[in-house]
Image 1 (spheres, rainbow, N blue to C red):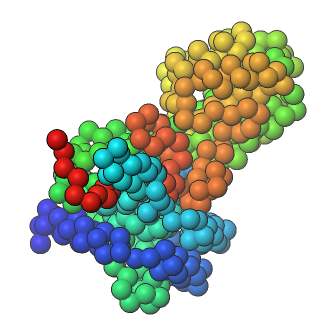
Image 2 (image 1 turned 180 degrees about the vertical axis):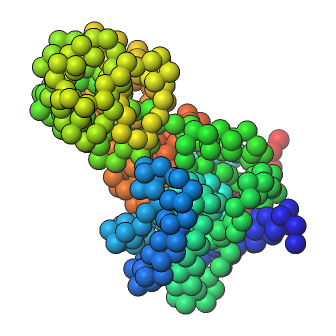
Length: 427
């Protein structure tokens, strides 16, 4: 069988499965999801073994420490996967909701109701927990999903999907097994083939670095929901509680540096920079964060860092860069207006935060920063479907048309109009 035939079969099977999936009741879908969650935990050992093989192979190829961290499945992450699937099971069914209802003067009654999108392709890198998140969200929202993870996680992804599908089939004999499929090949051409199947695939959602997302967008013939990168900021205002600012900035950068909602640039008001920068600089240094600073912040930081701390001069390109690593840009700005201008110019419209006790400054920041998620006195790390109460998330969108921000169940639905008449004719 050629690659084209193999990928076309995946698309055809997904389309057929999507029609069967749309007929399942909420109770049936929830029961299947609970069985999937139980299987992730009960079949932990073979999942961990598959992941161990992936980790060994990835380390031999020189995958970075940050990407290895994304790839790794430990007991906590497996438990979190299962918890996420259970949370999705407990959420209201997004399909069949009446979004609008009206009756025209001629008596024609119209209803706008939510429906599944159909067949969704998810293309992602490294993080095998995305397999469980994407599969559960697509299943609950009535969508068949074709999953194309990175080659470094193929064994892990296949194991997770296998045990989820097997558990659901035991729970429900009518379970459409092809509603969750893993692309079985790591050939790069498979992505182009998959994204040319306009007769079968309705939507593509890439999750990963800017290179992956741009590559997908360039070749896809089906609609793509995307965010190219996560260049996120924390701005410490002149009226900030500096202890709060220190904790928020440290969390935004160091809690998990390799994810898209981690801070990449710290902006500090000139009025508090001499007090704040030495505090956060020493703490970041202890976590081996490389600092890339503008001239004003570099002069302050130089005096406060211990010997061996990495302090470089920030370049213009650095401010546009998503590092996904223990590297942080630092810049001193003159007030909230300059901070907003910096973010809107260099940022990626993902997640940005202001730390301040000044409500006027905060409201200006919230109104003028053009990002999918904007925070006042909170870490950018909260831009996440689970943290937003959506259960697991399918991805984060920085597009302005359609879904924006964390994408949960509601964002995985479309709608159609139903018309109820008694013989009305248009004149």
